[in-house]
Image (tube, rainbow, N blue to C red):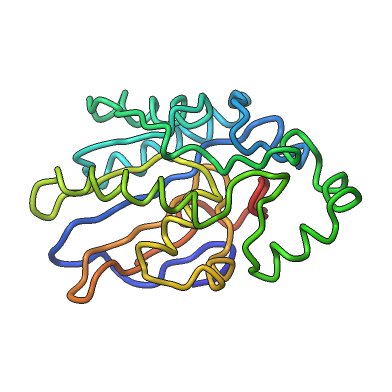
Length: 223
């Protein structure tokens, strides 16, 4: 596994799978502007990314799709729904981290105005970025949504979760049982790439991370 793209193991012979799929590109991603829970649309490039990724994910035979209710996620999920015929369940618990005053600022503006807060966050300290949510609070709301939908899967079924970079990272950390201080060790996801968790004898295992494309830069809140 690496922070750009890669596979850490094959799909399990038995057990359920969770595919955590990040939304396609938005104009704020390109501008390196912190989105958080702001409802930003996909760009044309983002729609094309979603369409391409959906063809790959459809070949994995998903049984269910659940998505954040923000437009960039629902538009991404719609491409997979169109190919599979599956309905998309929406849940606000899968939204990106609410980051208060950081939202709408560029990376450079955040560093200039909130440099100490930013540095503490990168050190793994519990920080309410811009007065918003703690990463543990994001995991508290998102991970249960994922597990509720997993419980509805058939044996050896596959759930696709369409969400956001920060929310996906914290959810993976929680499901793997990692201490929050170590969640930053999970590299960010490129637009429309995904990670795969598989059911193992001792719980969930990370099978793939940032998969689905040739290596690309990570543009977004979690880079």
